[in-house]
Amino acid sequence: MTIALAACSPGEPKGDPEVPMVYRPVETRKLDEDLVQLFVTVEHPKGLADIEAFADCAAAQYALIRGYGFARHLRTNLQEKGGVWTADAVYTISPALPQGLRTIDAKTVVAACQEHGIPTV
Image 1 (tube, rainbow, N blue to C red):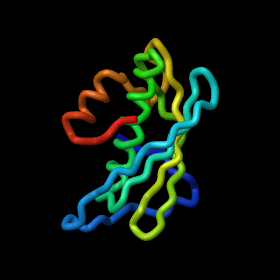
Image 2 (cartoon, rainbow, N blue to C red):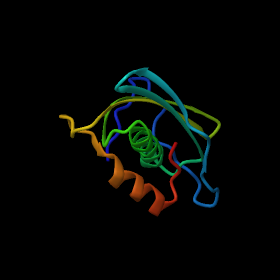
Image 3 (cartoon, one colour):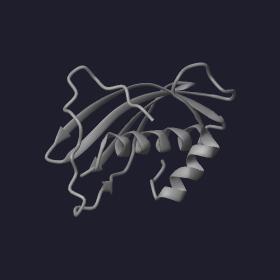
């Protein structure tokens, strides 16, 4: 997976393998009927993929909760402070597979998240 970052990105996390990652609760904001903004926070991620996966997991679960089967990533802005990374990510949700590069099959992604121990909404 790739992540679209803000122009002022704080760089790549370089988490210590000895320090466990901590996923904080997800904050969701419904922007429109098919548009959601998610704020996900990870303490001590090992890399950007950890933050991206958490955001995708939350978006996939949100889509299922709303009765949709798919999501599409629109953008992500990152902030870092003292090893705590917060992603402000926006996704569309839809009943059919949307066009675009970063599409998510919600059921498949939620199952993978559960398998890998990544929380969802």
